[in-house]
Image: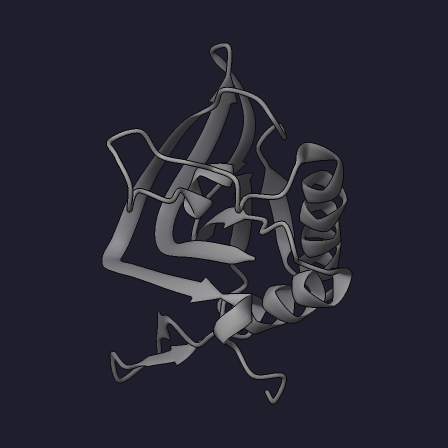
Length: 152
């Protein structure tokens, strides 16, 4: 799984002009699922992000997690994170998981974030969405489950 994590003061996602997910202070997570991902990848990445210390402490250092600041998370599926642009000008998405594999793993990620104690809003899987955000910092981090060790 690949995640683009943005620390936000607010974020929302709309489908056909109707807001389907909305958060205040927290994290916007754009989540892509790779064709070889497993439920363990979803759980591990969810835990990593929930405990990632990217919010300021009293000294202004990135030392608090979304859990510690009582923030929220907006999770939006985004298969285009697995775009391969090495050849030609049109991206290939063959590395992205097919929807029948991606959706349960996306849902497993969301469920694990909730189990960690974070209030979660979501986009609409496999829909054309409009995402709006105010990136706070800005802080933007990219994580790939294939590059993470299993040690916390």
